[in-house]
Length: 414
Image 1 (cartoon, rainbow, N blue to C red):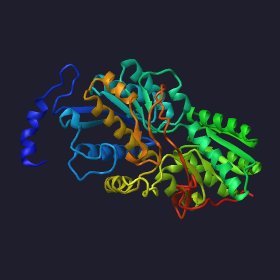
Image 2: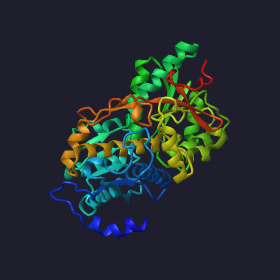
Image 3: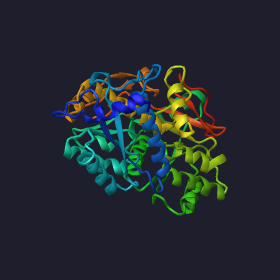
Image 4: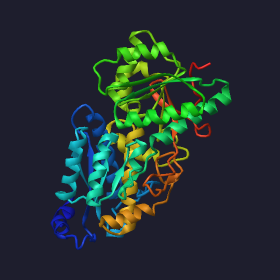
């Protein structure tokens, strides 16, 4: 902070909210709930860096970036007010997430909440925000049931697992038509959580509709110490494609378990989650090569999304890694929420909610390969269009849709 800014700071801090209406120098407090300690801490800390990057872009003075809220200087319709992020540690525990969300609203006076990586924590967070009538921006929770509970204050920028799974099966169909390599059987592999249950339900449904045999249907305990028995079942089934719905530690563990018994699947198509994390790529190493995953983000789509390069460069400078499927969704969620607050010209939660309902952002103003952001009556973004990616030489590259693919798929399905 320079001398002028330092001298002016007490004057700015003296300005207060009047009846919830933001004044020229008010900070707009947004609560951010993620696992910052425990097994999922690496994901939460990456998310923290993503939100801080987005907040810096919104708040600071810089050359314009071709992304929503990319002009900097704060919220212009609120006199240059800044976004203030207050982070809370869920420890990846739904009840801890519930308590921390209530604290953020009642003690930190957050006007909105964003989060939260796992769908299980999103359930309890959204119950609190609904009770207190504060918007919850679900950045990276993918369970389809989250927006199907009749909630008024729930909004999700990202596609959900039904949308993602439809993209997977459309890829199978398109790839089969293009190459003659058709998927005839799949193996479901999913953890015992709302994420795993919802993901496997839609995969089971779409496999049936596409006349694919379900060669194995394996539910396992999340964060298991061993997945050797499950690996044996997958080897025995030998499906054309394994469909895992797993977080990071389990994603690494199942690849290692299959490798230990000498089983290399014909193809893996992951429901992202742990498979898209940098910790997965580091932990799995060469075993990740060839794995495919649905994704909401394509780092290689810079031609159609010019904001990717500058936003990713700022994120990399802060966190020494590139944005991925999760962190790109975090950035997009905060940009979308800040834009709604700015359009509302108000810090009142009801005004923010109305502005979110009216949101209609074109895809080229995001870092995502989406058609855009527009919420339906359930709070779900209906313009989130997924992509399919594959690991080649330790990096995910986009392989579908074909018009945005940078390389063809490589797999052993015949």
